[in-house]
Image (cartoon, rainbow, N blue to C red):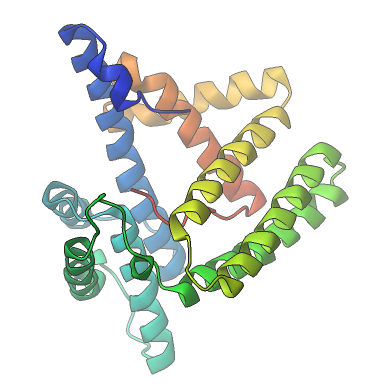
Length: 257
């Protein structure tokens, strides 16, 4: 499920590099829209589809280069604040989160200006408290998913979930104990663990189940206008998304850049 790496693109003939770049852009676009949709619907608490105006707003954020993790964090913070204020007016549009998206994007731009000469983000780029809270939330969800897998006789999946949880526990202790937080290393490891979980979820399917689920995912992607070159990768990503949802397995990645 990996994208075509930039160093590979540089070594390809122009026509192949263009096609590979288009694959990456198509996959990036799908991730951007689908992750925002999933997060907003989950926090809204009602399984209603986004409106054309909502999709237009997401497209605007994408074109402006607002990172996905900024939008997702803004949605979470907006609904957290709403819950604390005990407001009861229903949320019908993604525009409800627009003000927080703009505020966090402005903060993110300031952080980018504070990067060092090597282009690496400083330790302030990821608040320690938020990272620790994220790891704790992931561990809680993984524990519940592991218990469900064990009850359904999925021993190999349960073992992988237990293994990932153990590694998250180590990362959490590091995040809390290190004087200088190596947030980038932690986020890279989270990305790696998520890839391992994707493979474990695929392996838990029988060959017939996998073929049927991939065909269903491919049909669903027609609405996104995926071309033949990007379709396989996007189909696998969509299937991973569906398998995660069915087993209530959280996204581990702290950033979706």
